[in-house]
Amino acid sequence: MKKIVGALLTLFFIIAPLPVSHAETPVVKIISAPHQMYNGDFRNDDLAQELTPSGRLGQLVYVPASRSKTWVIDASLLDEVIAMTGDYKIASKAVPIGSSIATNWLSQLKKVSYLNDVISLAYGNPDVVLARRLAPSELKAYYSYGKIKLETILGRGVRTAAGTGLNAGTSRINNAQRLSYSNNRKALTRLSKVVTHPDVAELRMKLARLLTPTLDKASRQYFSVNAEAAVLAQTHRLRVNPGKYQITTENAKLPVTVINQFPVDVTVNIDMMANNSRITVFGFTGVRLPANSKTQLELAAQVIAPGETTILAQITDSKAVSIVPSSILKLNATVIDSRVTWFTTGAAILLLLAAITQSVRRVRKGRTNEI
Image 1 (tube, rainbow, N blue to C red):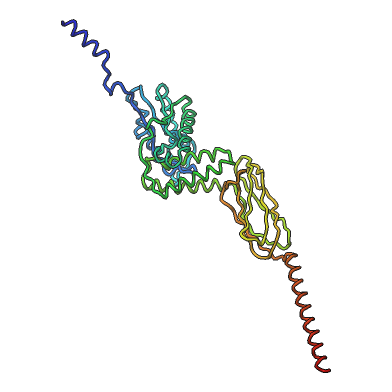
Image 2 (cartoon, one colour):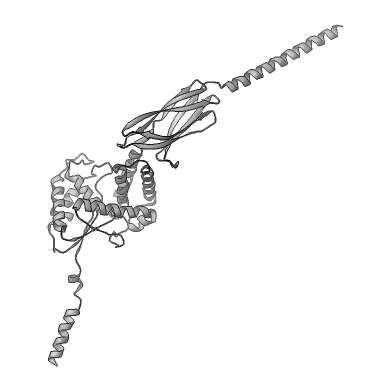
């Protein structure tokens, strides 16, 4: 009997599951609130403090509690750390102290995570529920971009957190900030249709940080305003120069300057829309703008009637989709169209003939009265 009981106990301990504390691998999340502004400067030097051995992020890599771990990492945070390893600037003009701290922390992270499982969060660690509601296709891009970025930084393969629920938390951005995010995202999406450059693609991905649950109320507003300025600066790199023109002939060729400040060639269409029928203008198709260039075009204008006309110059893609905000060209025509001249002259002749006819009638009537 004792042998049977002993055998059953042995079998029980063999097949019984281990307690959760022993069976599950510890999960370490490497995330933080954004610190870097959209122009590349840092809002403050708080990240440097977090990366020290005694800081919140430092303790996660310098004092590992166990060797077997699962690392869940936001690649946008590592992008900030990498930016800090170089000569970075702080918005307050304070002297940066984090270069060597960031370098050591990044090296330690690579070392302690080398043999462990690594999972990449959606880039910027956004609230995935909100991101899916606002822009589902963009959320897929955040996951994909985050994975590629993290693999590049660590020099190894990683898994994606898509579908795992690891991007946890709820963003508290208000409706105005949500609208700002959506408008900025759409502006960069339109720009990317004609401009293929990392500056545009990276800024578009960094907008995900606006949706992260890690931002407090003041930071949400701060980065929302900062993102708007950054997107406006990007779209301003491709534009038609506004201007004022004086037209003194019926047909004119007006010099219009188109600027491309991106280091890549861009091909666009330019629509010209007049706010009245005094002047007829014609747009341009298939305009190639060399990298970092100012290209001068000749705008054909035909005057129908004198006066002021406002032209909206709109850069579009091949499908007539607006790419950047339109520019305003103000035209003032002082020339009189030949058709107007003929009409005026004809009217004057008719009036003259009418006056002569009237005079002749009066003369004849006077002679009749004398007889």
